[in-house]
Image 1 (cartoon, rainbow, N blue to C red):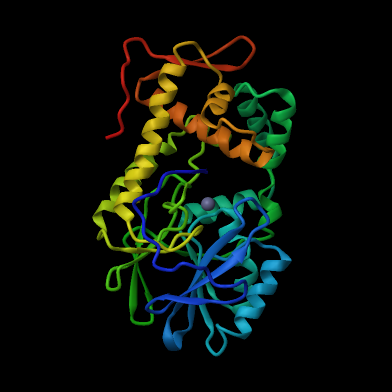
Image 2 (cartoon, rainbow, N blue to C red):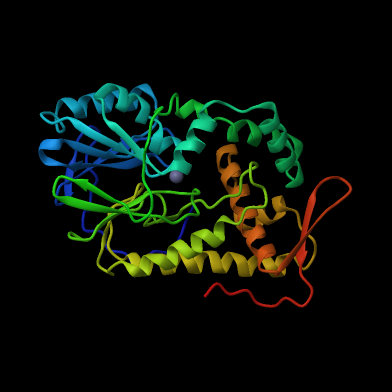
Length: 355
Ligand SMILES: [Zn+2]
């Protein structure tokens, strides 16, 4: 994730609700903010008021004690008097799904997300098998990182279960196009991919409100990464297609993102993010006139000191751009005798454009 220019967005709310509080931001929608112990220090989650049938909570925060205490407070105050009907998570990342299992147990709510997000969460929360560890070892060795950073990054990348102590055992599966009725409001499930494989976004057409999870954010670019389990994936192609698809929604849609402030300016923001990735792709191709490792490309794209957590995401993001350029024929990849991948410009390939 990196800060990107965002001159195209307006923020109708200038301040977030306090920890443990809630703010009405759209008809039947409460904004709740939960603290995260990372550089990205908060997540926004949403409580949708279904009237007599109860609340639908969208995203849950980490599965830690502090988050559970905040939910206990919310359930006793702003959410009191009505049951929690359903917990929806937008995707499998720990800050979104971490407290879902506990909330579902605590409230008796139904649990809903896409099949892929649920399966990935269930897989990762079981910890890594030796084969998964070996795949991660190979993946980071091929990247050209030094041995010490490789070990630190592997350790960090395998830490999913720390933020996700459990994942609900049963699922109500959400698919793109489904309608989720919350009281008298119909939220349409919007698909897409890129930040993860099958994230869930919710759109209320009647009120012009979108809950996109991390698929679009107002200030930082959502992380688009390749991971050891699918080393040749091209998630950037999926993400760029998803950015294009936001043009189907009205320009004045109120966007309720998982990080940062609610905003208007969906089309301009999608264009900013498309341009951000285009600029990175255009920077990488000439840089690879001389063969480069993924680690060298990462340092070129993220020209600042990175801690281990940031290195995991920066490396995933660098490889996502490299894989996308290979897929387009702009780069070639060869594995050297030392097992390290080298990327070089493909013969006769010129400019890369994304639009
Ligand atoms: Zn995420």
